[in-house]
Length: 267
Image (cartoon, rainbow, N blue to C red; front, side, top):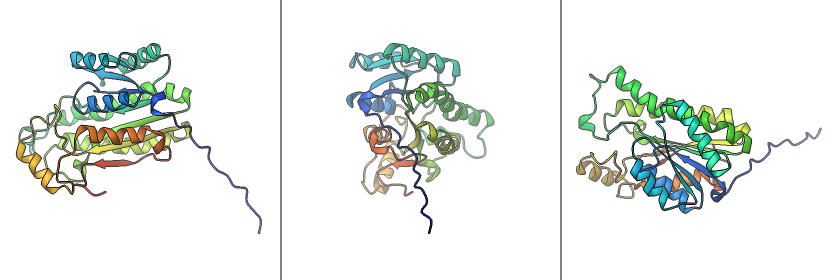
């Protein structure tokens, strides 16, 4: 028997959270603020992106003056994202190493106010596709040169459990988040050779964010009753999972979708 030479791929270097420069899109309010805060508390440098929440972004950044930078940009504008990446690199003297695609453009989680199957329009679907697929892709492309230069990258896309458990008619939101999961997996395969891991964290209904503030209380109660934990997941709990995917603990994990909803949806 002829012995074959053992070949193994090189192990990707993993930066500690404290050495990472993190961009959180839509990072000033709700879930985004929870994610930004979690990274800041872990010692990371954080770029808090916002579209119109200037006051909230600046107030959060002011709590961590050496670590945080608030930058305005509409994530649907690829040029604005490229300028944001350049500004962040200049400010912190290092490229962005970690991206959390969290921004949710113009959406309210109120099933009674969403279009049903007989009325959902191409315009509604296109608007959500621009915010939930095209914008994350543009954000990835804006930070990709710096990640390749560093030889390290972590990309975490925020998804939803609703395409496994479509209990409310958020047709446009659910369809585009499903497309984002496909992007997550294909980009993971494409970028793995560059030391860049791409994953998704999918929450359910969160108690409470600006987006879920319009959700009736009885819906929160229904979700809690159906969850093994008998409660609704908090933004801070979902943020914990995002930090896992950015941390060295997940260095061997890519192309995955982790559902964080208290066990409501299985797999």
